[in-house]
Length: 438
Image (tube, rainbow, N blue to C red):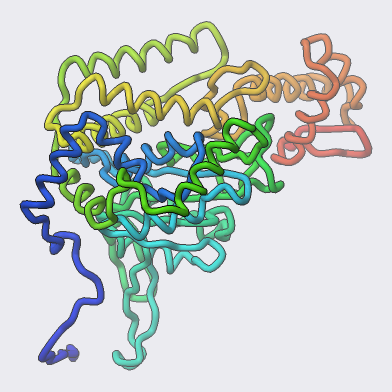
């Protein structure tokens, strides 16, 4: 057995480690002045892709600032852990500035990478192995963007264009924050403590508020559910909003605004804020408890579930990031309110059940709302019961008659049968005659 030894005279790192960035006393004075202004989040948000304008970007830029700073990673006594990194997904119409925003964030982040879904692979995102000529054909481990950017952020543009078999590799990286490689003779688990900012396009070109997010983008619900915040960018004619956009673009043609922070100062502010480990005040804890329990109580009076423990963890991460942005060692009620506002904006954009106009987390988790799920169950049971009388397939008219008696109109019956066929729960014995698969 032989080991290869490289005898080097000089090594030059291709990338600087974020710990090598020096923050001078002059930088600290400027950073503390911003924090003392009482509006640090807005100041930093205005400096994120300052050439992208529009009211719908105001809360998105604030969310990105919180993402860059991140929450606090926790290791529990029993051995479990909770990530502090925040994941954000932007879904929107073409020409709404998604790609420009991602490129800017990757550039100003202390440790950032920009990846395009059309050219990315599981190797490029996570890790893989390859043969190396120097090792005479031996296998070597090759880290992808999520591993190389650990401790920072990866911006994935056109996430919906990544092949399904490759996007499955994101599961572990997004939640467990590790990448496991078990190929050839290499068995390794790599650290991937990385925030993900992604952009995706609607399947049919434009966002349709009457359809669920799962029906509109080519991503599995399990991946969509891993994002802490999801925002929709719509390009709709609106005189007031269009005026804001055109005014912002025209103003950018003149000298740069004094309110925009230089990239280097913004980068150093983020680095400095990330070092703070804020503790929770009792008032902030009580505000989180009140918010969560109030929303959960709503589920008792309606079939929808507005929030789960996953969104609770997102709220905690966002509140901690807000405290860090203020350079505060305490998470206060103010931070919880900021986190709550962003979380509710996200849920209202992608978690609204079109039939009930209430927040239904099932739409994000599975792509099926609670009312749809209830309807599917009813139609399935109707077919199951009628099979006894129609062993050669239940006629559509028989299903329709019983469904109408249970308050389901014909359009919904057709949609439900199509879904049951698509999901392999029933099959069509002959035209308009159905049976359960098992």
